[in-house]
Image 1 (cartoon, rainbow, N blue to C red):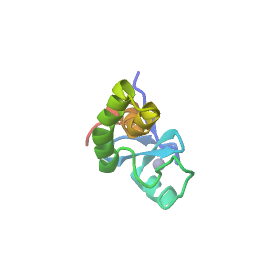
Image 2: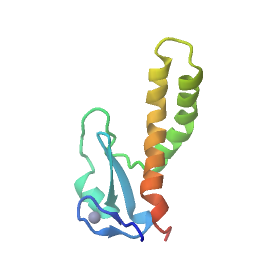
Image 3: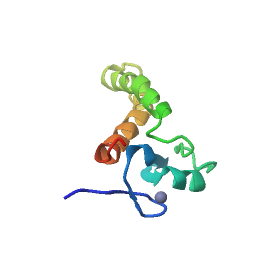
Length: 112
Ligand SMILES: [Zn+2]
């Protein structure tokens, strides 16, 4: 049974990876068509922890995850300074959501 990825705005199926925009709203990851995202979410200013104007499956989040994820992991595992584990969690935050976006949405969609 194939699991479909649906758009949070129009509820239609998203068929291709290029048409997907994964968006983080507070701590909830949602998927949108690119057009629906542009109409609905661009310019939306959300509460503190969300980055709604930057798609989670975009280059910025990927770069952030690749750079900060290992640092966060090292801080959590080997951090000796008080509070280093909490700082490590902050560093690992983009990597967790980038991986979630990949496994929940992108992996199910065809590239073209
Ligand atoms: Zn849509």
